[in-house]
Image (cartoon, rainbow, N blue to C red; front, side):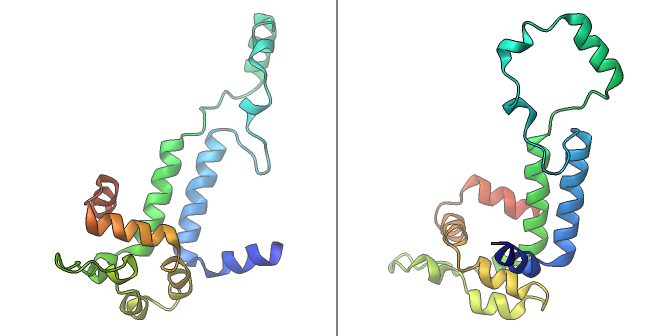
Length: 157
């Protein structure tokens, strides 16, 4: 299993990967999350919180830095920036479907030209990405219905 993870890690473009990791590490550090730590809210039963004397909580807080919770919106924004940096220019390879002829989702995006135009460090990752069902779904939603999330992504590019 480790070998599979290592291979996957190796095809993610180094620049965007480093940027993403740096942002996520900063968010985790700011939230007091350390590598390998289980989420604190999964370890504390709320019934026990009601029975802890206030003086004990205050003593604990004085001795420890109180952290903000992990900001899930900031995590999403980090991944948005990652995908924007990796997929920038994808819209040039969209194929607008003909109203008289329904074509498959695979034909709504010219992945061969997209991959040919990709830089050498990004091509292995993009080659894997464009074959996924989630990417095909994204292209279909982007082409058919002008999904508001897809439009947001395009605006961020």
